[in-house]
Length: 280
Image (cartoon, rainbow, N blue to C red; front, side, top):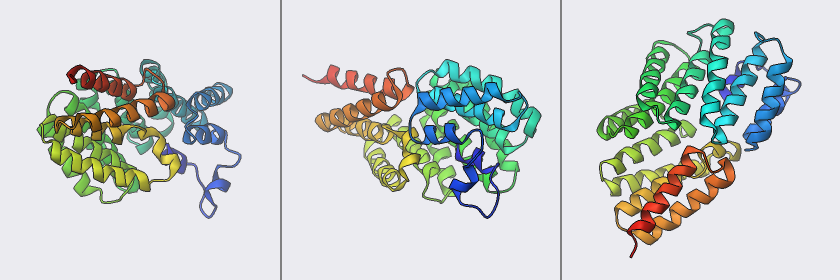
């Protein structure tokens, strides 16, 4: 979200001043506040009101897609990305970082729908293209695409590959930001997948520190993710009561933030059922 808006900012002004008056300012603010249904409605209204090839109409479609996915309507989100992608390609060009970022975000919805092989291929292609580019946006995009690739590999049971890629991406991305957070969560997932639960617990603790240090508006998309990493590791260590508390916290937070159909809410609910099924 934020990198897309940076494209439209003018130098020498504060963030608030830069956003004032842009057609997508309200949708962006609603999304960052975690008010996803309102953000989607506002973004779709902006997209309908502007000419199809207007830059802000394209960004509004992207916000609508992100906000739709955040509500757990992953198939609709993917359809919106499919609508936005040719518009981005026409306006910005297929190799522009904005277009590549849209493809990376779209691949995340593929994973949410269980299309792991397709997501893997798309994330790998975006990471390669971003790796050939220059500038901070391309560097950040490469890390984000690798994160999507880590998730897709883990989902296919290829945990050692996912671990190696996550460690490589973390070594290349030293900033203590949200990108580092999601990469550490991907690393924890790969370690849990290899039954290296003590190592995964250590990574979850590191991710928790990163999460708590983020500004509030950057935390919303990762709601419940740290608790899920903790719960999975604790269950693997047979600390069942602690695992259940963490899983329940994750589920309640995800349900409140994203709704019942979001992939993370479903994952937390499934983990809770698994824990309860193993308890005497």
